[in-house]
Image 1 (cartoon, rainbow, N blue to C red):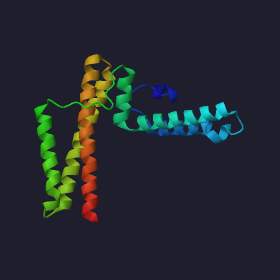
Image 2 (cartoon, rainbow, N blue to C red):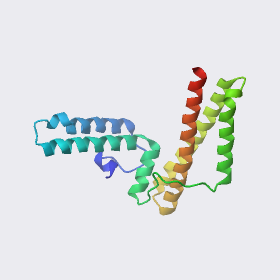
Image 3 (cartoon, rainbow, N blue to C red):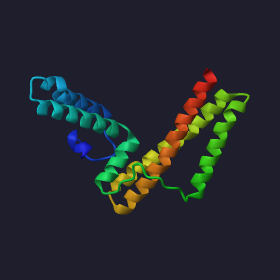
Image 4 (cartoon, helix red, strand yellow):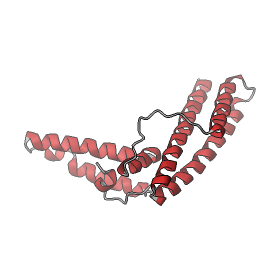
Length: 174
């Protein structure tokens, strides 16, 4: 299923999320099972299935990494749920250093400033990679799609580190 077509949006990485939200609400209202309560069992089932499709599509298009994966899947390059290791030594070193910093937070005299520092690093890296990802996806070439796939893989590491940092921050507050 092409999620962009479902929402009648252009198949591109940069989306107007406000417009996406408006179209989501309109589709939800149109296909909500309550709207089909007087219909046949088949109509009710179709409405439930369509609502599930709308929810899945909205969730995917709303999230930048899922949106990028969907764009690549539409182009014939499926990377969701794959397990690939990186051969980029600079990236691997950066990841190891960030993981070491996360491990040192609890031992720090000033964990809040350490959390802020790591947060800034993660945000900066994510912003830079998302910009590169948008550019690669806009090119719409096989070579740039492969680059986009690698950027998505890298971004997943940064989003995961962000979640770990938030968990550490919550644990320190408790």
